[in-house]
Length: 287
Image (cartoon, rainbow, N blue to C red):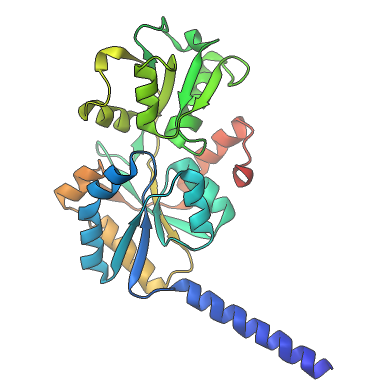
């Protein structure tokens, strides 16, 4: 009986090791790359076709671009190994990291630095002239797992004006950054928070009339959106992916990503996001 038990244990160990090996490269010819679902899915896929072509030519693999329905779906897809690389927001990365074995490897450079800001806007006719005026009003956020369209603007309102969501104003989650801009411009919410870069992109695309919104203020600088990969990918593939991203200099690809280039990053760069979560009493593993 003891010999049989030892054999069963050995078989389980071998099976486990084989499963890990398979998970490291489930399809040697395909790389599944997830894009942050902060804008229209079809627009994201179309705009990132040059990136797809570049990755296929430099990595020697077929690349499938994926846009999940929301941030939570993307986090779960990474958790269960259904995607290999993913373009996260800082908050969604920290949440994914708390649930899965992943590592960040590159962040885009904009205006010469790997950081960015959130912007808080208001409807031009809502009588909102300052953060304090949001009290008693409707505030639009993007996805609950969004950094620049939830965590950062919510923290700004708390630290700058002492406003707490649910107590001092109504928080409404509308899904994406462009939806925040549209809802504020249309008067469905008196104010909203989103990425400064995406706000500019929304205006450039003519999704809103610039005269219908006003800028209330900007956040400080925060680490840029990270690209992350499953830690159990083959070491040589991981190294190649890092180098390929850091080496991107194609103007069309960078323009579509709203970037000037990419810089190497590490997990510790996002400790500031973890500290903000503590301020708001957020449990990243349960979000």
